[in-house]
Length: 128
Ligand code: I3P
Image 1 (spheres, rainbow, N blue to C red):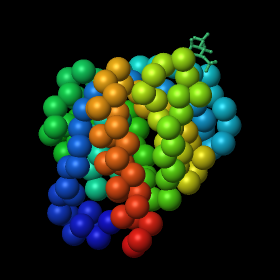
Image 2 (cartoon, rainbow, N blue to C red):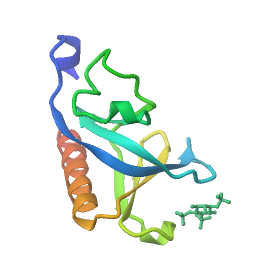
Image 3 (tube, helix red, strand yellow):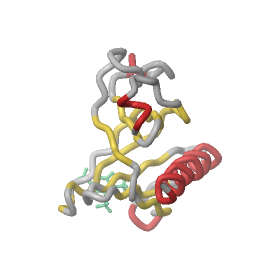
Protein backbone atom coordinates (compact mmCIF):
# COMPACT_ATOMS: atom_id res chain seq x y z
CA UNK A 1 0.00 0.00 0.00
CA UNK A 2 1.04 3.61 -0.27
CA UNK A 3 1.51 3.77 3.50
CA UNK A 4 4.13 1.01 3.25
CA UNK A 5 6.14 2.81 0.62
CA UNK A 6 6.05 5.94 2.74
CA UNK A 7 7.48 3.95 5.63
CA UNK A 8 4.38 4.52 7.74
CA UNK A 9 3.48 1.64 10.02
CA UNK A 10 0.22 0.08 8.80
CA UNK A 11 -2.65 -0.32 11.20
CA UNK A 12 -2.90 -3.47 13.31
CA UNK A 13 -6.49 -4.68 12.97
CA UNK A 14 -6.44 -7.85 15.00
CA UNK A 15 -4.15 -10.51 16.44
CA UNK A 16 -4.73 -13.84 18.13
CA UNK A 17 -4.18 -17.56 18.30
CA UNK A 18 -6.04 -19.78 15.80
CA UNK A 19 -5.60 -23.28 14.50
CA UNK A 20 -4.46 -23.27 10.90
CA UNK A 21 -3.84 -25.67 8.06
CA UNK A 22 -2.97 -24.97 4.46
CA UNK A 23 -5.04 -27.16 2.15
CA UNK A 24 -3.99 -25.94 -1.29
CA UNK A 25 -1.01 -24.25 -2.90
CA UNK A 26 -1.57 -22.60 -6.27
CA UNK A 27 -4.72 -24.65 -6.69
CA UNK A 28 -2.94 -27.93 -5.89
CA UNK A 29 -4.40 -29.82 -2.96
CA UNK A 30 -2.16 -30.37 0.06
CA UNK A 31 -2.32 -32.83 2.91
CA UNK A 32 -3.72 -31.19 6.03
CA UNK A 33 -1.41 -30.39 8.90
CA UNK A 34 -3.21 -28.51 11.66
CA UNK A 35 -1.06 -26.31 13.90
CA UNK A 36 -1.67 -23.45 16.28
CA UNK A 37 -0.70 -20.18 14.68
CA UNK A 38 -0.41 -16.62 15.93
CA UNK A 39 -2.42 -14.73 13.33
CA UNK A 40 -2.01 -11.01 12.76
CA UNK A 41 -4.24 -8.91 10.51
CA UNK A 42 -2.35 -5.80 9.53
CA UNK A 43 -2.95 -3.53 6.57
CA UNK A 44 -3.92 -5.70 3.59
CA UNK A 45 -2.26 -8.84 4.92
CA UNK A 46 -2.89 -11.77 7.17
CA UNK A 47 0.44 -12.76 8.72
CA UNK A 48 1.11 -16.13 10.36
CA UNK A 49 3.67 -16.86 13.07
CA UNK A 50 4.41 -20.28 14.49
CA UNK A 51 6.86 -19.29 17.18
CA UNK A 52 5.09 -19.12 20.58
CA UNK A 53 7.44 -16.23 21.42
CA UNK A 54 5.72 -14.33 18.63
CA UNK A 55 2.46 -14.30 20.53
CA UNK A 56 2.16 -10.65 21.27
CA UNK A 57 0.54 -7.83 19.32
CA UNK A 58 3.89 -6.20 18.46
CA UNK A 59 5.17 -9.33 16.66
CA UNK A 60 4.18 -8.11 13.22
CA UNK A 61 6.20 -4.92 13.42
CA UNK A 62 9.11 -4.99 10.97
CA UNK A 63 12.14 -6.72 12.48
CA UNK A 64 10.41 -7.91 15.65
CA UNK A 65 9.79 -11.49 14.64
CA UNK A 66 9.96 -13.55 11.47
CA UNK A 67 6.57 -14.60 10.12
CA UNK A 68 6.02 -18.13 8.83
CA UNK A 69 4.01 -16.77 5.93
CA UNK A 70 1.87 -13.88 4.84
CA UNK A 71 -1.31 -13.71 2.79
CA UNK A 72 -2.39 -10.80 0.59
CA UNK A 73 -6.11 -10.27 1.18
CA UNK A 74 -6.75 -8.36 -2.04
CA UNK A 75 -9.23 -10.41 -4.09
CA UNK A 76 -9.30 -13.15 -1.46
CA UNK A 77 -12.44 -15.13 -0.66
CA UNK A 78 -13.80 -16.30 2.67
CA UNK A 79 -16.37 -18.99 3.31
CA UNK A 80 -17.55 -21.06 6.22
CA UNK A 81 -16.22 -24.56 5.73
CA UNK A 82 -17.58 -26.92 8.34
CA UNK A 83 -17.97 -29.40 5.48
CA UNK A 84 -14.18 -29.43 4.96
CA UNK A 85 -13.25 -30.58 8.44
CA UNK A 86 -14.34 -32.71 11.36
CA UNK A 87 -13.53 -29.65 13.47
CA UNK A 88 -16.14 -27.07 14.36
CA UNK A 89 -15.92 -23.31 13.74
CA UNK A 90 -13.86 -23.52 10.55
CA UNK A 91 -13.63 -21.12 7.66
CA UNK A 92 -11.66 -21.25 4.43
CA UNK A 93 -9.57 -18.40 3.07
CA UNK A 94 -8.67 -18.55 -0.61
CA UNK A 95 -6.16 -16.14 -2.13
CA UNK A 96 -6.12 -14.94 -5.75
CA UNK A 97 -3.08 -17.16 -6.30
CA UNK A 98 -5.03 -20.28 -5.34
CA UNK A 99 -3.61 -20.81 -1.89
CA UNK A 100 -6.22 -22.12 0.53
CA UNK A 101 -6.13 -22.13 4.31
CA UNK A 102 -8.53 -23.38 6.95
CA UNK A 103 -8.67 -21.39 10.17
CA UNK A 104 -10.37 -22.72 13.27
CA UNK A 105 -11.07 -21.91 16.89
CA UNK A 106 -12.82 -23.84 19.65
CA UNK A 107 -14.54 -20.56 20.50
CA UNK A 108 -17.38 -19.72 18.14
CA UNK A 109 -17.48 -16.01 19.04
CA UNK A 110 -13.78 -15.70 18.36
CA UNK A 111 -13.89 -17.31 14.92
CA UNK A 112 -16.95 -15.20 14.00
CA UNK A 113 -15.05 -12.04 14.90
CA UNK A 114 -12.10 -13.12 12.76
CA UNK A 115 -14.39 -13.93 9.84
CA UNK A 116 -16.13 -10.56 10.07
CA UNK A 117 -12.92 -8.57 10.43
CA UNK A 118 -11.14 -10.30 7.52
CA UNK A 119 -14.25 -9.96 5.33
CA UNK A 120 -14.33 -6.23 6.10
CA UNK A 121 -10.75 -5.87 4.87
CA UNK A 122 -11.51 -7.87 1.70
CA UNK A 123 -14.59 -5.69 1.05
CA UNK A 124 -12.59 -2.51 1.58
CA UNK A 125 -9.92 -3.68 -0.88
CA UNK A 126 -12.59 -4.66 -3.44
CA UNK A 127 -13.83 -1.06 -3.45
CA UNK A 128 -10.39 0.48 -4.01
C1 I3P B 1 -5.89 -36.14 8.38
C2 I3P B 1 -5.92 -35.53 9.77
C3 I3P B 1 -6.68 -34.22 9.76
C4 I3P B 1 -8.07 -34.41 9.17
C5 I3P B 1 -8.01 -35.04 7.80
C6 I3P B 1 -7.26 -36.36 7.80
O1 I3P B 1 -5.23 -37.38 8.45
O2 I3P B 1 -6.55 -36.40 10.66
O3 I3P B 1 -6.75 -33.72 11.07
O4 I3P B 1 -8.66 -33.15 9.04
O5 I3P B 1 -9.33 -35.25 7.36
O6 I3P B 1 -7.14 -36.84 6.48
P1 I3P B 1 -3.62 -37.52 8.33
O7 I3P B 1 -3.04 -36.98 9.60
O8 I3P B 1 -3.41 -38.96 8.16
O9 I3P B 1 -3.19 -36.70 7.14
P2 I3P B 1 -9.69 -32.48 10.05
O10 I3P B 1 -9.04 -32.47 11.41
O11 I3P B 1 -9.90 -31.10 9.53
O12 I3P B 1 -10.96 -33.28 10.01
P3 I3P B 1 -9.85 -35.03 5.86
O13 I3P B 1 -9.04 -35.92 5.00
O14 I3P B 1 -11.30 -35.43 5.93
O15 I3P B 1 -9.68 -33.60 5.53
